[in-house]
Amino acid sequence: MIETGARIAAAAQFDEAARKAFIERILQKFRGREDTLLPFDEVMRLIGLAVTPRPVREPQLIPLDKIVGSVGRYRDFTRTFLPTENVNKERWVRVATLLEGPGWPPIEVYKVGDVYFVHDGNHRVSVARAMGMKEIEAYVTEVPLPKDVHITPDTDLKALMLQLGRARFLERTRLHELRPQVRIEVTEPGLYDELLEHIDVHRYYMGLEQQRYIPYHEAVLSFIDHVYCPIVEEIRRAGILKDFPHRTETDLYLWIARHRERLREKYGLPAPPSPKTAVNTFAAQHSERPVQQFIKRIKHAFALSSQEEELIRRELEASPEEKSSSVRVPDT
Image (cartoon, rainbow, N blue to C red; front, side):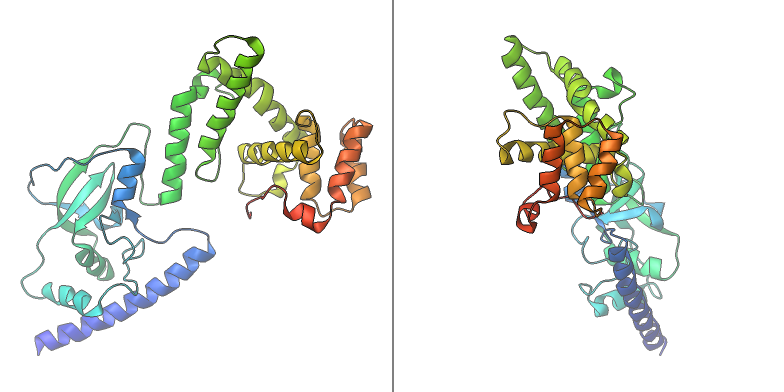
C-alpha cells in the first residue's frame, strides 16, 4: 500500500514537472535562449580538452543548481532538469520511488570549472530537483578549465562559443595589449574568425604593396588603425547603432564590410567605397525614412560629394529584388 501511494505521488510529480518543462521551453524560446542542458562532449571539443579518467574518490555532496549539462542525455531534460517528452515516465517514477526504499547510489559527474555535467544519474538529478532537494551525493571527476574560460550555471552553448572565440581572437592578435582602448565584441559565433580573415587579407595586401614580409602584429595594428576604426568612427557619427539593439559596433563593422564589397561589385568600382559612403548607404538600405528626407539628413551630417550622394540615392531607390540580394542583417 505504501509502495502504491509512493508511485501515485511520484507519477503526479512527474506530470507536474513535465507541465513546467513545457511552459519553461516556450518561455525560453520566446526570450531567444536555449533551454537544453550543455552537451559535455561538445563543450570539451570547443574548449579543446581531453578527459583523462581518474580513480573514483569518496562521494561528496554537490549543489544541484550547479549541474548544467550531461554527457549523453542533454536533450532529455530542460536546463533545470525538468523532464521533456523524451523521458520515459515509468522510469522516472521508478527512480523516484527508490528514494522511499533503499535510496540512491551516488551519481557520477564531471566538474568543469565550477559547474557539473552528469555522466550517470540524470533521472536522479531530475527527481531530486522536482522534490526540492538542494544537494545530491556524487562521485566527482575534475576537468580543469583554461584560465580565460569561465562556465557558470547561466552559460549556454552560444555564450560559451562567443567566449572561446573572443579568447582565441585576443590570443592570436594580442589586441588587448596592442590597442587596449579598442573593444572588439560580437554577438554571433563565427564572427571572431571572420575578423581574423579580414586581418589576414589586409596583411596579404600590405605585403604586396610594400614588397616585404609583414609581421602579424604589425598587420593587426594597421588593420585596426586604417580599416576597422575608420568605419567604427563613421558608425558613431551616423548614430546607426541605436537602430540595432543588442548588437555591437563590431557586428556593424562586419555587416558594413560585406556591404562595401557588394557595392564595389554592383557598381564596378575600382575599390570599395569610402567608410563614410559605405556606412551611409548601409543606413539608407535599412532606414524607413523617405528618400529625400534621408538624403537631406545625411547631407546635413556629412559633407557628401556628388558621387557619394548619387550612390546613396541609387541604393535607396533600388528595386525590392535588388535590396533582397543585399547584405543580410540578422534579426534584432
